[in-house]
Length: 201
Image (tube, rainbow, N blue to C red; front, side, top):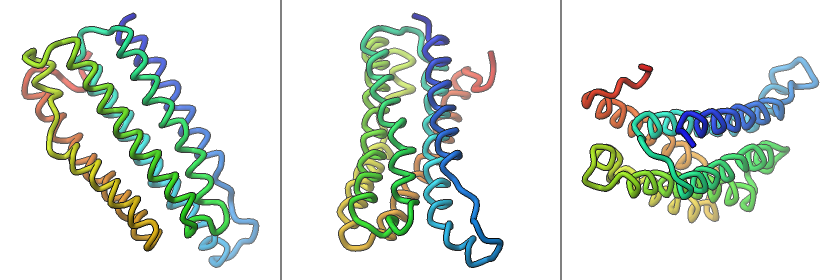
């Protein structure tokens, strides 16, 4: 299988995930500011989830922009990542439904899914490095960095803080998303400096 086919399938799944999330947004039944504020937690949870799905889409594109080889392990690790990303709409809807944004279990599940998505992506990246070799150009581009460790550690801290305050935990989850955006920019510059045009054919 070529990386283009894998990317096309993954893009389709991610597009469906975003579509499901936006369809779960419901307009207020009353035309007042108060009614708008009532759905604010739903919109915020959608915004955070949209940010994460977008980050993984861009990261996925970066990953397979430089990958030269594909094998069975990469196919399965890619599906593993897509599984956890496909659960995001469910957890997003649960948090945004009614007052569940302040309930512990929905927020714990939301944070757990984000953590597993991060670990799944690292596993996918590791599989790509393995088939190319750590000493290859691809291996040098995709080698682990300190931000990966910081993100995983921050997720764990956020999951612990859920039991103290769910709003603080959600803020931490958003912080991880910001860190991942910074990581994306860093990797993009690194790839471009080595001759891989990010948006080139």
